[in-house]
Image (cartoon, rainbow, N blue to C red; front, side):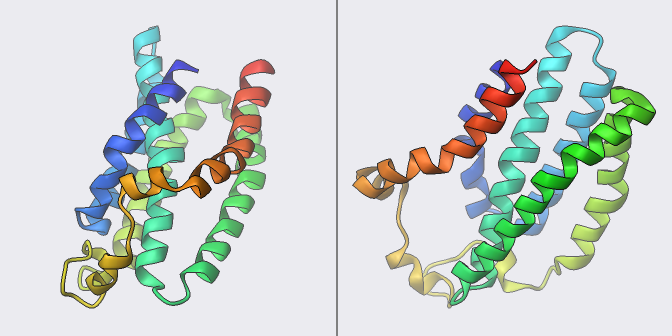
Amino acid sequence: STATLASALLLPLLGPLMDRHNLRIFSVCVGAGLALGCMVSATAAIIPLLFTGILMLRLCGQGLMTQIAGVATTRFFGDQRGKALAIVGLGFSMGTALFPVTLAFLISIFQWRQTMLLMAVSILLLFIPVSLGLLKKSDRYQQPPEAGTESGEASANEWTRKDVLKTPFFYFSVPMTLLIPFVSTGLIIHLGS
């Protein structure tokens, strides 16, 4: 629970980095952090190492990877970003349905430590090379929007964090957004353990 809360507190500090850096490089770094988190968790023999591993898993996996998907989608699909985000949401739903069953199956065969190492190897040998292959260096959406550029012209209409916090709609949408993660993480995992 503490590692999950710590990752949630770090997310607002690290998340905005993708708005200032190349998305391709940021994605690979987060993937490497996720692989490292899997390795640290798998080999942890003491509580501080296990805490660090879980923190990295939560921050790089569930936190930053989710943000990268949203940012990459909104950068690439300017006019159709609502539809594109809806399709990405379907992918999240599929992952939520398939990953726990797949991991439970792998853990029943290999035990949890070996499964974590298998995940780390999969990230290093599959995710990172595929990401580098699919995300071309020359794509303009890889770079953060700059003032005066085609994507940066809309920056006058983009909201700052302060603007969002001033809007009452934000406070109505937060409970709806947090309901599913709270139920799945807070109740099912932590209370069910």
